[in-house]
Length: 236
Image (cartoon, rainbow, N blue to C red; front, side, top):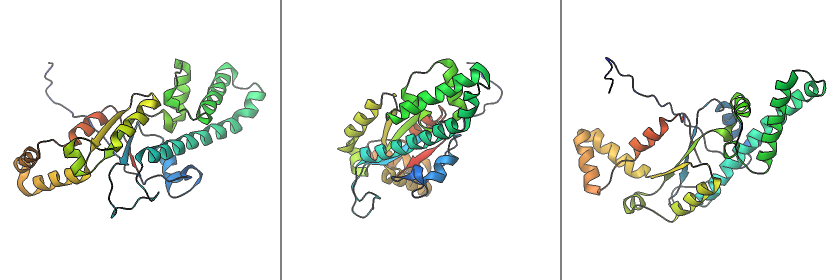
């Protein structure tokens, strides 16, 4: 409506990290280092596998996206638990000596509450917090406090059929978490074919490819949802 002289499009920076495995928060695989490096991101894309293919191996030797997501969330909580415990250990002496005043005591109490919730298996983002507590959470940059979007990579056949057996299970898992997170199914195979069509024949060829398959690319939707501030892609 304003029609400014110049327009600056929204920017979405995505960092691709290695997949987490069991024990990542304790140093297994490459996960622990990555968990330490991604604290400053605004949100997380969880890209999980929702297709069967004997030629594509899986670190757990079977395809079970809900299990995979449970592993990831547990590792994120474990990293936050570690951070809480380190904070409490470092600041306990100060609190016992009544240094820092009421603000420091409130901060310390907030971290104790966070630790209790995490040890119950509850993410920081799934809790209700007061405004003063939110200031503490933002300072700590907890991984489980970040908004998340679940990208489910399914086969081309399932994508064209608009569903597979894994999607209802993933939706149920996400809904039970109670954070209102979005689940977006897509197919890497299909998106690659659409990309190849555009690379060889331009946008018109891509549109013809999409039309012939009776569907659309999900990449624009994935990017659009990312404009809310998600700056990390994470996958197994």
